[in-house]
Length: 538
Picture 1 (cartoon, one colour):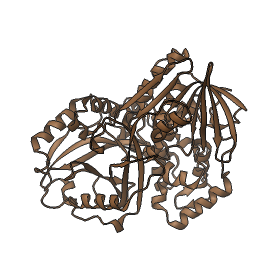
Picture 2: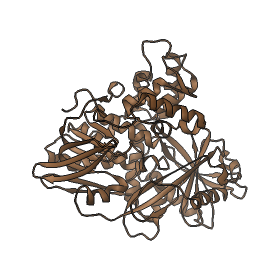
Picture 3: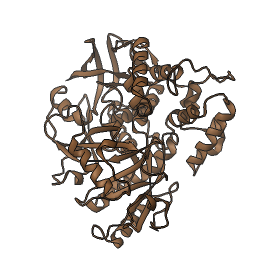
Picture 4: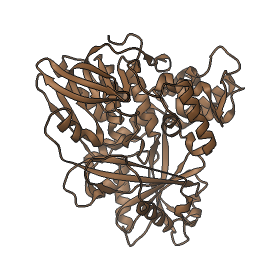
């Protein structure tokens, strides 16, 4: 269970550090590439100007999916690749990813039934499928999901995809990278990167103004929406054309009691999802709004809220009103400019461009959560040979940190075809081992941390030592874990990315968490905020 015990530790960065690869960008692509390269034995430094997953990678619809609607745009290769990755990911981290059934009410005026059946048949068979059941037609007058819909929707289709806690996925990739020797540096921006004969000379700058120099043999530009600007400005290259599309979501109190999600077809030929979220809520999204100019902070507009409420209300028996919205989030997706007229039709595939000069530069364009591991593997396959690294791909059969439950439920977890049955057995094992741990905390920790729960609880103690309860269900031991092992530096990092407790806590409780973090954690990063594992490079 290396993934449980391996952990980041603080270590000062040398005045002039050297590494094999400097990865710029702490979203899913940057964290995934850092993980893969570190696992091949390369010395990796990952820097992120804000928090891990603070922008696009925590603002997805939180699906591990092939992209059913992309079939309509004939993106068969992308869908096949994503469908194959869907099962790889579900196996790798059953605590933060799980199967989800989707209900699509049939609207004959939009798409005929035969077309939907044909699309679902392709979706079921484009890639090997072991964990997920096949699609089927349903009578919504009898199916549990029909009760939440308006009565005119009598026929529908049910198919399978997966759900993912996107921000935790990024954190766990960074944790795994650090456990394999990478250094992860948050709240540091790459202010400048210049190519020299022997490599890249980079200047990193912290939020407090601290500057450090890093020499790297290769540079990876995984800055997401900022990748084109980084290439042109900091890396002094040629600007790349990207289409920036903002996607926004709303969260409302729970609209239906069953565990299925909905795919809802809109009159504008787009779709939105309505997904069970955090037990007490429903997540609705997304929009597609073209962004002109630099990305900047993404915020939802009132028109987007109205759009999502109106589209959901066309289907749901209980109309959705803007006044019901308890939280919103938005992110800017960097999409390849394929000259599609409609933003929703722009490809979600990715492109890797390797400038293989003496000091290699790998630029990452586009991508989506579901294909991040494949993207990272392909990036490492292309970059490693230029650095004299012969180690091959390794992530396809590897667990993400916390995903290997075998120490708790036995070796059957390693080859399971029912990952959620394994999670139920895991929860039962935790209840037996720590009967005094509050059940709600135990279930939440099982989902957030998986087997890494052993780092929060003293395995030799019968009664868990949780510390003070800072807010409902949030104890000091969890806050310290997130700070020490997952780079949390503020209450926002904890409440809205590492966990989603911000949705469940009152304003007073959120303020209590903020004050606790300010009292116990440094407000700004310093040179010692570089996380590494035992035996990392010097």
